[in-house]
Length: 281
Image (cartoon, rainbow, N blue to C red; front, side):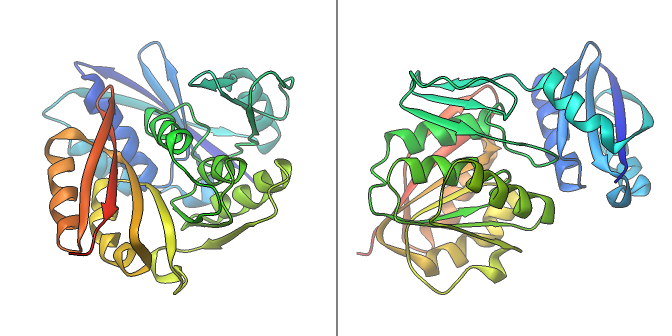
């Protein structure tokens, strides 16, 4: 399999604009991003690359900042070397250690997660994933039924399993993420996780105590109604993948239509994660 590497260089870009662009590139199929001195590098499977879509996206920012980019082919056999060079271990709240298969184990941490990221989003390094992991670590998941939407590498569901969740359903529309989730569950000896490839239409007609959804504002707004159908009374939803203003207010308003109430939120840089609860009056 061949990959394309897009090397971006910017002038006059703000941090929040770069984060937003990365989110929209992910919607186009770019799955991995690396910072460099003048911008960042983005990777995509060659068969998934849409040059017209990329040009159209970049043009929407023409008045905000200057962008230049160069495209290069990357051979499949070089991919593992790229990850080993750029993926460093991560520690969440001094209790959860996230590492790749090529890092040494650290048994001193109560929770250790092994992730073979490949091309899937969600190694824990992005602020949205980190905040979601912080919420999970603080939640009571013992014997809970859990749904993880936009599961990426499966890292959130795997952490939930280590915290005692009874059943885990992980869903992602990207086949690479679906396969990565299954492989990472096996790496972590998680046997109670099932995965599906698709979107809200493949969510099983069963009830969940907890829903995790680290996606983006527009997809969340589209899927909240379906979440409400499968969330148990007093169930919790943890959202991330969006900004404080105006995104949080929009998501709060949409949730309120279905009796799902805002509880609190976290902010890391420009990104927000939020906790909601279903209450039936």
